[in-house]
Image 1 (cartoon, rainbow, N blue to C red):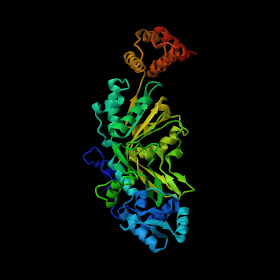
Image 2 (cartoon, rainbow, N blue to C red):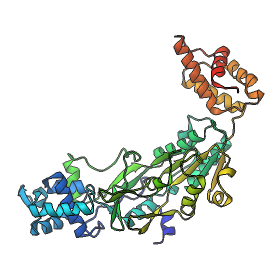
Image 3 (cartoon, helix red, strand yellow):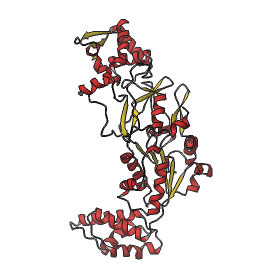
Image 4 (cartoon, rainbow, N blue to C red):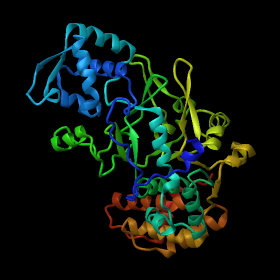
Length: 449
């Protein structure tokens, strides 16, 4: 199956979820070699000490029948020994390293010190990522409004955002500061995270004989119905060991990821992060964002120049895949299946050229609010803060500032009302909005140089 075919393939099971990775029955189905698994078992026992067979299977997230032959091989090679257990088979045996096994484990640790869930093959990761592409999300106006109820948006702007989400491509959001670009971008992420359904990401995958860790608790939010059993859930463990109708435990079910970066972004964050002491890698941010949203906020203010960043991504945006390089210099291909959002208050013409803009499917301009929109934002924020409406205060702001040349900003409403709230708290007064309080807040907030 070609990449282009995969990118449009939505393998749903009827529940609104992509088809889950199935439990492997054999080592070959797990995509691993016996030599690789032998080293993982040795490292696991070296780090954790003696373990029951069932606990080894849990730790590696593999059915016991997949690791059983490796345990037998290591026992015959006198690398491990059985120091206890019941009479129900190897699953209940306690395995410990022999002296020879410790030496071989130390050698294995020098080559790679990764200890944890067994990785999945790169091919399986690619296949699963295309199954759960962002274009598979059900997005209609009625469904989408729930994630934007806290914002006051003109209908035309709301209707421009929806097709961008459905496309799953890329969005350029621009306009003067303070008018909701970041709030809108984050709301898109909230929609994808809450209404976009769950996806499966592996703890790690194997590429070019190297382990790349992917699951990251700081960016991947476990789905409420995550099916991986707890260490004390013996019934679930038995079901997984049998391997009937269960999800491959090397994969974690998470909400669609939303990764937000700002001025701290640099080019090194888009490459594999190599742990030279442990000899394995951590996937870059945009790979962790596959199936979700990658937001570059304050675009143009990163540690790298816009040109450098765009040159790095101009082909991935077009081809929907990227190439990563391991320490040996070998490259491998990974999917670039996520909604990319560029948000900036700088002039797009000063940041990007026509070649790049052509690759950005959707351009959404967010301008200063009209007066009716400003009033709706002001009143909505006042209600949220427990304040009374104050039309006189809005009249004052327009008479004193906005009609005199200052462009209104949507963020002014929040900032001014929070200053009023602070003034009232300082004076130990109940918050009652008035023209005078708005004028006092504006005098300290709106600098006139």
